[in-house]
Image (cartoon, rainbow over all chains, first blue to last red; front, side):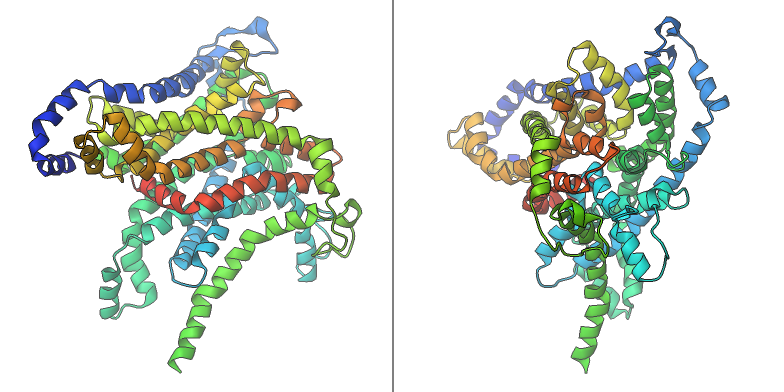
Length: 313
Length: 278
């Protein structure tokens, strides 16, 4: 920033003093510019978060108001001692995040590498490949529920034709298949995110690096390992961290495809909180659970801050 | 011999995997379209029809008029348009400040923007419900517009400051030396060059509001105020699902987002790349 400013100032050397004066006079301008954004973020992002912390140490149950008041750490105690849903849903969250982010990264990378090559209609193919990114979680849920359906689902039909199954399965109602089914549906929606960000970084890798690798006799696989991956390292790490947080919070498909069932087999921690918030009325307890999940995500947030350039600047 | 090898190579390393991945992408969309155009009786008929035998638009009529998708569509449109306007005004201003000025607290402001990206959305729903209930704005589109604006500003500000930085500062200053006022140079020099970025940011925001589910579910409790995702979700939850109307409703919800996305995806890819790289 200061460098480009210096260049500019030399470029219009004759007007230097005029600019100086202008800059001094406009000192309050940047604050005026950020004011609307600042106020809205403060009022409707930071204030709500602060109240979550406040509610978490309160008994705040809409259905039992006579019991409301300061609770201290009782909500938290309940989470870690008597709550039978907490640990299983935390484990499900872990399963959900690891499998989603892992699979999306691998397939997103493959897609980005493919789309980075030159071929006819590349622009069109890219646009089509990225479409799921514009599709909402609920919409993806309706689409996949039409495919997973026991009676009319095309997946049953295809699998039976291929001889993999003998009779129609209710994929979403079966504890052994429900989780995998939701993961596939979310994978469909998540691949483009990684593909888009990786593609942007791929196109900024200088060709000379590949040429040098070729001269040294590196195979395609080796130049991927020793040229592409190191160049993409930062993007991979940062987008993965962002995605971990995002997928941890993502409940649209779970909410709409399985509702957390069957038998809570697809209830993640966020799904559990969302269910408490939407169907329950115990805001104090829900808030305490939210604070716990925030604590878990904080680890990733700090990692991101440490690794991103904001720390180094 | 060499060219044949090259062709085989290209098929194995490009066309084959690309076709597989694209089929995975396209098939669910195709199946939804296929279902939407089938008469109700044909949807569950065996053998399954991979292409509708008696294509009909009756599902679209049912979804639009009977199920209420006309209302959901209108609600989503209102929320989307006003959020886009609010977000564009706020993020252009703050993006401009970040890109063009050095000021005390700039780093803190950027850190504040970054921190918001790690706030779990589920964390917002309980307090937001309480806040808007106290303000008397439950089931009022204003509650969604304000919330979505707050959520979108951090990312779009970073996006906009990137787009603004791409407009050379020298152009702006040259215009001012030629006698333009600050506002004139913004309007005649910066704004035209910024337009693609503004469109991309607007599209990005609109698609987000069009798709957001959990907050909309929490902040609306009247069917006449449902947005498309909430409408679709309640329809899925019903005991006797009309699959044809559900598919048709999905297509209705899909079309605007996909058209806008196809239009702006190139800018989005560039902007996203810039934003993620920092």
